[in-house]
Image (cartoon, rainbow, N blue to C red; front, side, top):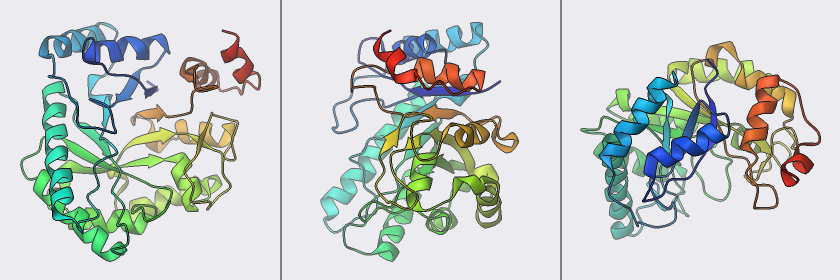
Length: 293
């Protein structure tokens, strides 16, 4: 099965059951969500009955609940400890998110490694490792470090930086990687040589650590370090290249998640992009079709 989906909403009333219903409306077979707003700490209590109903419904539809992904909030920054109180807040909040994932029985949590904000990459990586060793000590959840575009003082824009973090994490069973195609492009990786990139990851880290892929086109040329996502086939990466990544044999059991922008900031494109991906045919009228739907 092709595990293809998108980012979907999660609200305090319908919770994960509502997330599933939204994903199904797009023709998705998996999905990713935040357990609350990514910019703040407001969180509603997890409704365990809705978790049960979601699992039952997915089983009826022959969909794999283990392929679901949670994304950690943006306000977590494990790389900077200049202000100890903020650093400890990030660690504490990440622990809470892990507990929420455990309640949801969703065991893959994507995390932006963090920004060192002037401390330097060496110190930033040390801080990330130190924090991860705290939060993963008794965790059932696997944290997936997302590959970043290299904007500002972001850490995680090179395979070597991800490698160094993983090497420093003690609980290797609970650490992994989330590849992001837009971020890889903007960081300087030529995705037309994607097999070479996979070989590099396998050699330096281990391909088995890759457990999620964010499928996004990019508004920017390679090595722009800007991180601006584009709709599939309308950016500098292109439809054919993204399709090869989506259907790559070495990645066939890994969930692929669309994070492409809403058309005119109003219309979600996911139903149409997923259909295009399934048909393996670029629809150049996609934007107009979405607007007129």
